[in-house]
Image 1 (cartoon, rainbow, N blue to C red):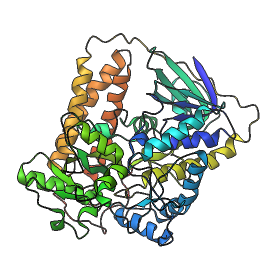
Image 2 (cartoon, rainbow, N blue to C red):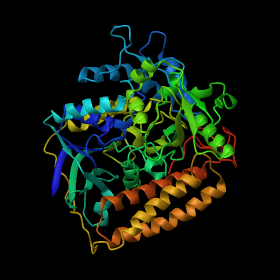
Image 3 (tube, rainbow, N blue to C red):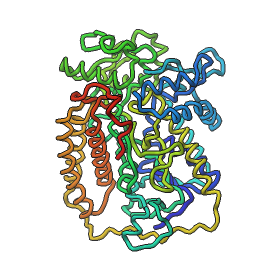
Image 4 (tube, one colour):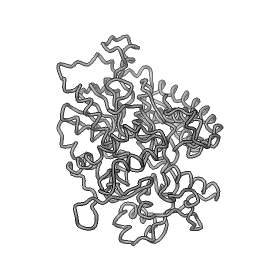
Length: 535
């Protein structure tokens, strides 16, 4: 089956949906998402969106906070572009129907919270369900738009690019690598479909499932980075993996994040004995940057042998806690943890990729007609460490800039004809009788990444990880060509590629900076180390 549209958007998080709504003004849009539309990482965002809306705040302060967090690797022009566009993007969401929390005075003023690394209160939120509120509102608007088609339970296999034509002896007019869409697996039926588009936009999110412990949903398997890298796109700064300091530690809780806003509202980190330990690690204590807090917790756990630390906000009024954090309160209570009376057990977990597909200020990748926005992209905003709540802001701003750039091509409609794209060829692949290979390698990749390429790294650990991932990649490659593809196999293939890129990037950076901490090179080295790790 062949499906054509002006735009193909792969991913249905806030970046992809925001882009699709804009793109529908000038063309037809197809959204491909491998689960239901609401099953995106954006939906799990609790904290909010950073934006300068308070008279006591300023763009310069937000820019300075972002650059400080980025540990010398932020692109200041990109930072300024994103920060100064923030207020307009918030107003745009409100006009679409997003219901942000307001202060308790009964005025129309938005309630602004504070998180680690921010010098002012500037986090716009909907209590502790911001992602769900924004995602839900965008989906409602998308579903009402008759120029947008959503294909649930579809997963991209590979991009359709110039080199694929050349390898099959098909001539095109393109002299540079260009993207015309993607081969996509219908997960429900097993059919491989050809999706063609003048513009392809990757909004596939991150790769948290590379690690054994993560705050990300199961869909975060590095798909966009992997399929683009295989097509020849450049990738940057994959060593900078942000570990959120506070993921709920409980055998019945999977991937449940305890928002940084809990610490922003006065929550304190305690050890098993009830002692506050962050004062020993940083002057900002519990509101230090995420990399510092995560490493501090990691150090405490290694020193004590305990399985978790505790986050305590029980000193705040009960009504305040329940009203400000209704989702966290309810989930904890389901597990017999009353956060109004006792501390919450927490551990760090893989949370956010600061690296990704290398893009410019319009979200353009190094492959023609291929854009990347949101967590899948490396735009230069985050540098070596993302400032809290800058991620949704980045997604919204780059959705706009990517649309404005790509619309110039779409507006020149004419009688556009796609090249003769070859259909998907399964070759001699057969149904698998060795599915255990997939499940075993899935587990091994995630464990080796957690143990060897986690919060704290060493050269010896990285070398071990590199050797093992090479063997795993060989096993996956053989399996991929021998057997008919499934979504599990595709995700394993992508996770392994993302892991390989993280390992290669981490190995090449001979210093400690931001989210990359290597015990063999514990200091930051501005003189000898390159700005970006580009692969």
